[in-house]
Image (cartoon, rainbow, N blue to C red; front, side, top):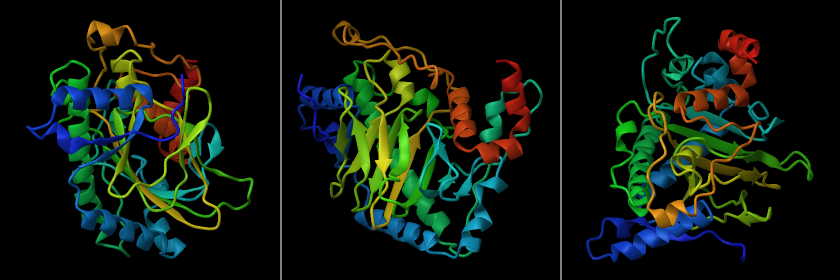
Length: 341
């Protein structure tokens, strides 16, 4: 079977157009999601002005003096929110060459008791820089649009899998654990130091990415080769997360991907991760027989166990990726996990 060299493009406006050949559209989307697991989405309706605005804000924040960026360092947050210095987030055990801000829904922390699940401690407020007060409004407006588009793509996927289009909706109410990163990739420090982000999968349902004009994202093919995800004007990049892999018993696969550090230039990107409520437990859906016959089973990787309980999956990812925050705020959980090995 020939391996893909470019990602498919899906025009999501066809999903809401009554004049669309619905079966043809769903077949096209199903093929993109099943065969590659990554695809471009056009026709999303997010204004160009907002997409430009968030990239300008990203460049403005990372141009601030370091002490102004460190005002919102994530070490201050037990919820893993705020600014991460270059080289302090880890993927596949190695430091990533990027700096970023992690942002989630604006919520008050939950006071937990000894019998409450640990993942509830992820809920809490964001940190915003005083030197760039407009950032909060821009990001939350962009986040709302990213959520709208992601929900529409998820509904289209549900229909493409033979389900009612609102099949997944129960887990995506006001308590859904959505997550935004505003990311800056500085030029690589040496020509052979090319890990912007190491090889990984995303653990939610879907991820949406807005890129600037600089490439670097790569998607791994089944034969081990790599597809360069070149920036496409007016398109978001979407990919399947681990929760959809579990829900479809591997008919959809969370695809491994990485970011190669830019050489001699800066790169900016804004990914959005569509996660459900933290208490969501993913149950296998009943696929039509012709799709079920193509299910490949859930990936069995001891280094990256896929957990059907979303909150546990999310907490595992945060603790692994941000060891300094984990040591400062989650030492009791780390000790408990060590004792149960």
